[in-house]
Length: 69
Image 1 (cartoon, rainbow, N blue to C red):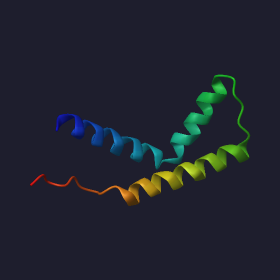
Image 2: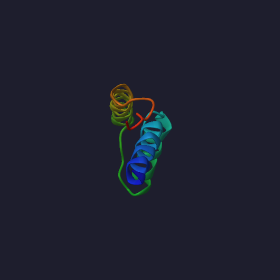
Image 3: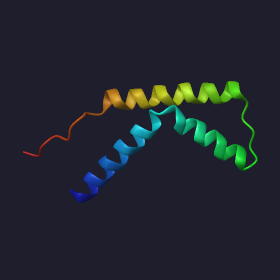
């Protein structure tokens, strides 16, 4: 039960971060800092795909935890 709550909280946090374009910009900046260059067109595509995935997760997952009966 506690583990399930922790996993749900972590997933909600991840979805919230993935729905922010700044997350993808930060990932691109971090990778660039490590020596990997990403062209702006690719960065924009990755951002769009990531936001789409985050939106899909938001649609599929319930907003509230269901009460155990």
